[in-house]
Image (cartoon, rainbow over the protein chains, first blue to last red):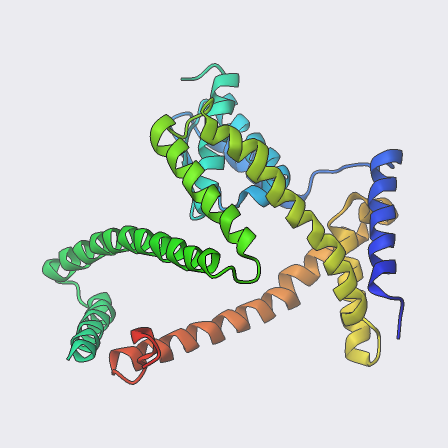
Length: 109
Length: 206
C-alpha cells in the first residue's frame, strides 16, 4: 500500500501553487513542430488560404486558444486568408470568436 | 414488419455506400453526394430528437424526485436559458449567449478539466509502479516523455526532448497505428454484420 490519494492530491496541489507563486522561469525554446508550422505559413504567398480546424472544447480553451491566436495572427501578418472549421460544436463558437477577435486586432473586416 | 423494413434499408444503404467506392460511374458519384446531403439533414433532425429525449428524461426525473433531481433542474434551466438567449439575441460577440459561454461555461469546463491533473497523478502513481521489467520501461518512457514536453526537460539536458520525440514518433506511433488498424478492422467487421442483417442492436437491442 502506498500513500493515500489525498497525499498525492496534496503534493500536486502544492507543486501547482508553488509554480504559480515562485514562477521558476525555465528557458523556453521553439520546438521542431512549431518551427515547421511557422516556416510553412511563412512560405505561402498572399493568395493562399489556410484552413484551421478548431477541434477543441471550452475546457481546453486556455491551452489551445493562444496557439490558435498565434497561427491566425501569423496568417494575417502574411496577408493570408483564413478559413475556420470545427468538428466539435464548442470549437465552432470558440474558433469563430477567435478569428473575429484577431481580425479586428489586425484591422481586417 | 417495421424491423424488416429497417434492416432492408440499412442493408441497401450500407451495401451501396461500400460498393460506390469501387465504381467510377457519374450516377454512383452523384447518388453518393445526395446521400451525404441526406445524412446532414438526418443528423440535424437526430439532434432535435436527442434534445427532446434529454428534456423528457430529466422532466421525468424531476417529477419522480429521483436521486440528483436538482442536477436535472440545473440542466433544463441551462437548456432553456441558452436556447432563448441564442434564438432571441443571437450568438455573436457582445450577446448574452456569448457572455455566458465565455464567463460561465469556459471557466467551469476548464476547472473540471484541470481537476484531471490530480486524478491523472493518482492513477499514474498506481499504474507506474515498477513491479516488473516491462513496467520499469513504461515508467522510464513516461518520465522522459513528460519531461520532454515541458521546459524543465530541455533545461536538464537538450537530449531529453529528442528522446521524448523519438519515443512518441517511433514506438508509441507504431503501437497507436496497430491499435487504429485493429479498430478499422473491427469497424469493417461490424459494418459487414449490419449489411448482412446479423447485427441488429441499432434497432433498440431487439
